[in-house]
Length: 555
Image (cartoon, rainbow, N blue to C red):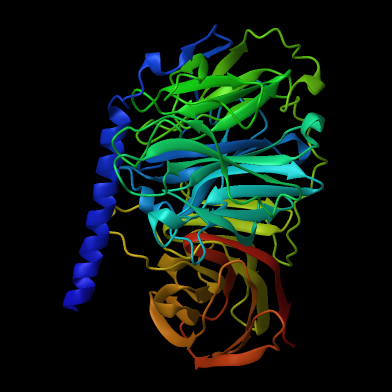
């Protein structure tokens, strides 16, 4: 116990040391003076940031490095780093997700084209061996959305750059670890270089040279190339060197973003002097933006932004984002170019005006009756949304029920109730302060014989769940909380399991199977607490996906 207690305290100490170092570095002058670069003519400017989204509920949350993409049916999607304040970078294990029909509308607003940014359940959760999830970047290619991101790693020298894919931006499949790099190799951004470069894909990301935790390392932007978006060149090449700042953490090469306009490429890079200070450098060679050691880097812009992402709306207007720890959410600023490139010619840029893919209809197959009722009245705390893959639910503070209007009578109510269930998160509630948070697990459930549609836990009900708590398994219990039976099983994220309960009077039989397995009866119980009531689903401390939620009466 002493060694476990010491290890836990050591982890917490390391987290706070990490945050302290990053904050100190971020709030200080990085030691890259204006004389270290060529001060060229200003070719791009921004400022006048306006607020578009705040993920906070009764707890303050932040968005850090994020990505925007126009999804099917013209709906904008934002995925990004998130956690409750204060900053806890090593505990950022889920990606925030928000949608809006209009890029620039404030959350909940009705102006600017109708509707604003709406909070969704967590898009994804970390999977082993990932230690955290940072800086997603999404592109669309040939019918599939590719999300590149940093998955942490066993050491700072071996940080993962990983890939997940999705057909709809709601459901994501972990593909593979693409490569490992450091120090803290992170913040990937992917673009196509165009016909002049044989339509090669390039990935930019930040790291250090050498790959070491030494205070003397140089902060650099790396690049790797690919022809298929999966296999990436090795070794990487250094395309920009910002020199040393006296620490391997943070640095002026964070959050690289490259845009081609005409024959030139523009590298957005930051933070420099302070937390929100992005510099823009120009080059006609996407693999050489110069360095600050021999004054070959040509700076053509400076914008007060942290975690910058360049995005264009459907009208062709350019914007730059701003986010970060303690910033109050997400902001956009108009981006103005002075390079003479024709914004109406999509061939002149790597970022043409975005075009939406055809809409994908939500598909949730269920025999249960609407309307549905959420046990959490504030939709900013608990989210339930029908997606093309099913019903997705999310809540981080405990239990959230979503109950149908199907109400079985107390007499002659023998039935079968079943559902396909997929857990998206596994690590419990990341909203608590770091020194109090433990990875308590996540769960997804089917609920039956609930005495109340709006407050099933208070009024009483039966629940069968899959969960990742204490090694994982399936559990049959009732509210007020009392476990009736449990079954150990190594429940994994992103695997669709099938739950079924057969209820005959006071007899309850639970059936379970994973993909490729035959259903087996894993638990039997007798209980007379409830005899009739509502049917529905539940999530506990995380996000889950439900499909084929069906009930049938037993004669």
